[in-house]
Length: 414
Ligand code: JHZ
Image (cartoon, rainbow, N blue to C red; front, side):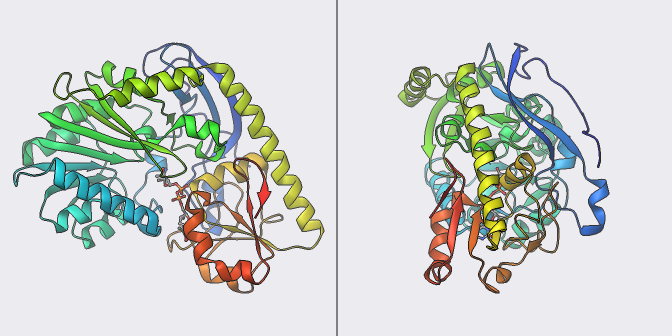
């Protein structure tokens, strides 16, 4: 076994230098999207997945960080378009930006972390001036095939300055499920500062910490989700980087997310939604340490219940298969110690994950066809955020007696 690889430790807040109080240690964890081949397991890297909250700005953040270039490599396997729901969501985002902001032929949109072009491909097809920036060459190839233009690499002040020099300023900078992933988040905001027009907007979507706590989505905590955003903490963060949070909206993605709209101070009216949500967070104590301590106790309970259920099913001779080799499943399996003895394989539609092993616990990942060959007795739904879509698709599994196991907000069988 490799020892934990401690890369960088932040006893103080990455944003305001206030003290960070740890509330949960989820143990030794791998990079959640590094699926090793069976002969590559010795090269896996681990870190201590510990989460805390800043006593001053209330940003929830990890105490140690997996290095960015290890998480987001050229062969990063996640693809936004593997879910119909996400594809429809990004088509809607593209339509909204095109109709409200990108109305002039000269307007430029830059997407940070464009992945396989689920959003940008739609704008490209509409003739909108655009550029995606993404470190994954594999995902970028698919985006390009969809008609999007992509620069392979990270977005920071240097690449942003180069984009501005080549193409001029951007009216919109957009990003989904990326901004919270960057521990050194100042590089992103300095890049946006270089790139954005004086009246432009920076729109980013990310998971909402209040939903994670309320519905016990503890598996949304993994290496890539370095920060868990609240409105109050993001409001303070963007102000620190010289911007203003002008709007915030709840969106039903990945179990509960927020769409933040940021502008230069005074450039856009600040909508009432910002103050209203900050007040709601104060009423539900979302910025308080004790809220997270209670959440940590709930996580321990869910983990113990899940292992007990899987052990009972195995001992009773029942077949359980994992469904969806999500990043989230890395947290669940490594935190609970769930390996191939309890879940012999996970099926997943992503070709880049198939034939490989799950990070850390080394559960084989098989193509979707393996699910019905033959159907298991139980399917452990790691992709619970796509439950509606998956359960509709897998009606036959249930019709012939199969059952789903869910572990959020508590362990239950449906
Ligand atoms: P899904 C990733 O998280 C990583 P993950 C990242 N950090 C992030 O924030 C979100 O995405 C946006 C498979 N699947 O969306 C495909 C099926 O097999 O929950 C995927 O491997 N059959 C950037 O990985 C996985 O499940 C299906 O029918 O937690 C879903 O991954 C469907 C719908 C999915 O994100």
